[in-house]
Length: 250
Image (cartoon, rainbow, N blue to C red; front, side, top):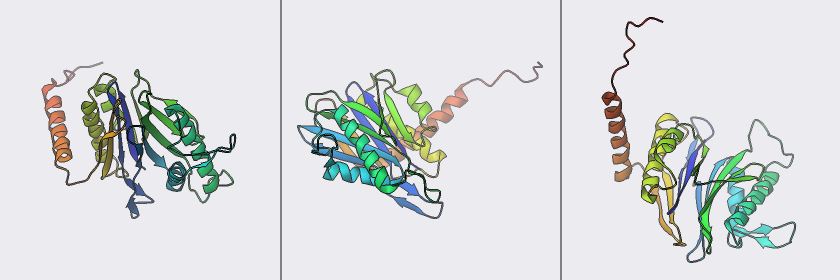
């Protein structure tokens, strides 16, 4: 399992992804799930992946190396898309191609699921930053200012925090902080999500990543954030009056 989230605000984009993958409690490994395709001054694409590892790695390889568009015969890659919408369609085709190679029959084998989901965010040329979610079938939905975040993987533990604390007008670094709190809440509640965490932050119009780094267990800021959030929750629930229902009958 995994947890990745993307947050779109007026000033830019934040993507956050854990790195844990496992096939049972005794087989845990670390794989990068946040991939960056960048040509400073021209484009920045960020791809977060969840689901079957062979399919998602195939998608990343196709985007890096390029593959043929069956309609035009041209070789397309992450560096050839002219708009973010074209990039989202390209990722959808890469998903279908990788899925066909991983499971030619289109069916599960030996109980293995080939389902995937991906987040694609970024900016190309003079276009605005955009954020998409791509599904196993290759279709996509786009993030909007009304619902300005998307999640994949084990999303239920981090969703309430995003619902309450972030909106399209949020500061870019506040969005990063809230996303990290959302990730911490998921890590605490689900053993299949874990450190290290990869983060990427793109400011609108910059055409290069402002932040691209990995957070591990020794990261001082993340340790302080975890402790501060726990203390804040304890203080908040202590400040709320006790329920007045003792001794009350229906």
